[in-house]
Image (cartoon, rainbow, N blue to C red; front, side, top):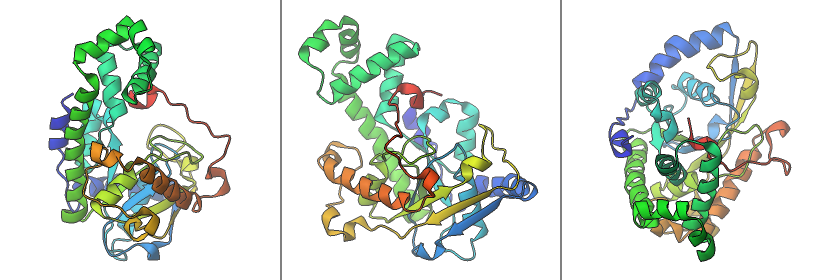
Length: 323
């Protein structure tokens, strides 16, 4: 897949026609006949400008009722349309790619995904092999792989040599893609007046797990407020991997107060950077602390069954990068 061309094909609209079509001809009849109640609490917290919504991700479709209800309140709130970050792996399907482009979503690159695709090219698609070398490659990128470990695995060494300075190859490629993604997000917020919708956990989980720093980095760089949203009950409506819902369910979205990180003394920062580039990485600790602060705000909006737990464990493997 040509990821640069994929990002170049994204054409955002102030009023996404695909979203309107899905809302009018699919979601409205579905939610009406299945008697779904969608409650938005905290609408008064929305500022008079586009924001970055950050939401827990309990199931595959839990952002659809949220987007739908924002649209239903379009006469009450200043900015009701969103563009959602979607993993690149879903764009491997031509049908899904067309759907996501039509409905105004943003394909979001990640280093992990690029690494897995490079490993697949070299080692094939055996998941046990890919997991082994993915973990080794992560340690190599972070500088945590000893010279002894590196030299003792000839296959892995051959993989690195094939790409000729893999670290730099990955960094250059990722910077190119992230710059395009950043420009799309900037266009969404400042030109199309769209809200960004991001799942900071990076994967689905009933209980809230540790967040990744992407939403925070974009909030700083774009100078835009983050609005935490707690989604409660969507997993009981969407119980399958198809966009069909159970009858007589209620989903409650609690919208928290906006977070203006640049107005908080402990988080003030020069915002002249592209997220996830070398310049941004210098503020890694600050981003992690700000992300922890943001995730606590999401947790405050959740019912007990969705709140984070010390027993909740997330396995870091390659499955989230493979369709």
